[in-house]
Length: 344
Image 1 (cartoon, rainbow, N blue to C red):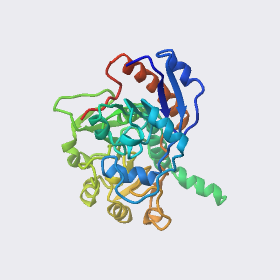
Image 2 (image 1 turned 120 degrees about the vertical axis):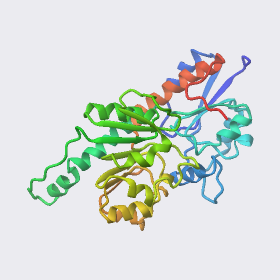
Image 3 (image 1 turned 180 degrees about the vertical axis):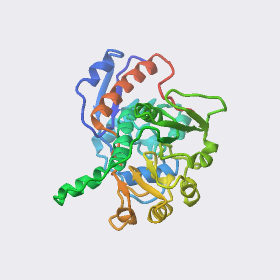
Image 4 (image 1 turned 90 degrees about the vertical axis):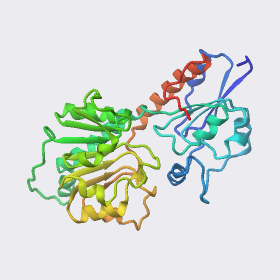
């Protein structure tokens, strides 16, 4: 890399950081940071996630003005959650793409790698806040908090007692950065923790996990879990994973929570499992269509808890994202392996 000006384009939508340029210039004094917000809708991200980061349906994309296009043409480094489809033409000098989401299924990672671009995900930067959210939801159900809120609204006083988490079995489907933080908090509640991981082999262990299994053993593990939380990324193997057969295999009264991707769940089968009373509750922070349409049956399904893809807490997320990027920028300039580096 030469000593010419190095343009870093920040496409994030959560505000300028006046300190980021100084931090990067301590690594390379030639850095110039340009903020060019580019935020795709949840619907676009969901559609791109099905096709490896390329939009194949006619859905509106954010408008990009001439000044932004000019900056992108100069940029060697991009920090973003999203990536424009035509990155070859729009970002012709791109050398390093720092993603700021745990999964990059909505980004054309393969296309970038084929160009020789270094790509890193944001895995881990929101893991703690998502894990906290997971337990906020479980506690909401097991401690009857929705019921008490409704009683307060109606000015009613009627005792109803909840369930204790101690001794319950939690099954974490997809043991990565988020899963490990969920397990840590589960052990603080004295829960029995079972987790699946695609690469797990017999005898493998993990901190805070009582029983680590290969993903292929998922069906047989469902019957023992009092709660199931899915943190899986999008892939052809995980699409429609949770169907009627999977829900039938779950323990009666189980709480099912999904903070991974909405494409994992066959929502009609989930609703049927709730209506039959087989599932105790469903807690979805991700859905197949985002936002959920007003006429969707998800809204009225019994014991359904829907949140608008908001499990992450944006305060610490921003701090963690900047810290990860600065560390990876230093590694990239030094020719070292990146944190969360992607490979073909």
